[in-house]
Length: 127
Image (cartoon, rainbow, N blue to C red; front, side, top):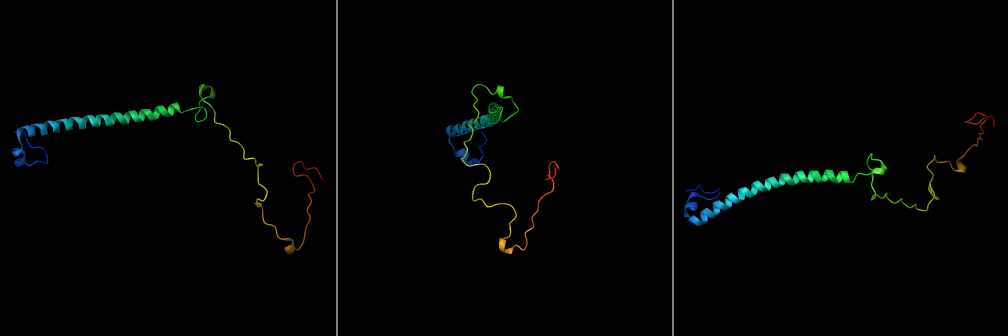
């Protein structure tokens, strides 16, 4: 007689009809075979996913995101469209508060000293 499967007591196994016992044992063998196949397929799937990732990385390379020359991009590669400007001029916009040091209001000023340089800072010529 066969040893009862895990989870079934010896008394219950002996009380089970012979046809049912053989069916249970064959299903357990099939489950074991399917588990082994499942594990092999998981390993294969992991390997294929890794390979797919590396191949996608190779395909997505262009002269813009790697050190490849632009001539190697191929005929289907289109550079991205240039962004359209906002219509504003460059630099600070009208109404923007200045970032320099705050000046005192004219009421708090005690004395105004005029300063004029004697020579040019760059070439040194007298002014």
